[in-house]
Image (cartoon, rainbow, N blue to C red; front, side, top):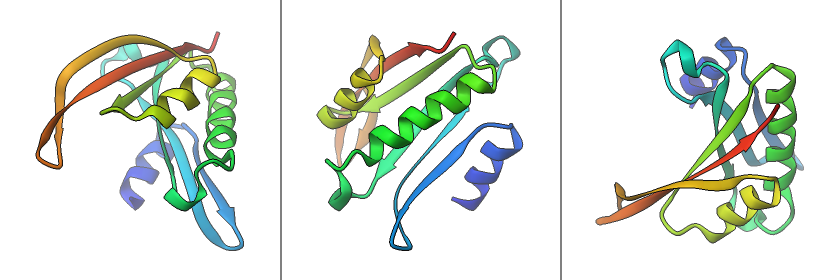
Length: 125
């Protein structure tokens, strides 16, 4: 986690942490979408909210701030890649202006089953 966080910060991208009473309840960060130079203005978001803290707008606050920070850094668009059938994550991204732009069936394997990958995108500029 520490190396991943440092790699994000080394690229000048935001890494946000939400705390409540000294405990981490969620985090999110932006990373480079693809390594080639032509994609340098598109970022991918990653977000995690502690299961007992879902439904309290932690994810909304984190992702909204991440969008703003990436906009201020000059990013053009943000992509969210959502594995499996993750209704809360799709709803979160949709509520903040993301639209589904692709679906890759059986793109990942987790817990012994093949899962689809939903690709959502939001323009920042």
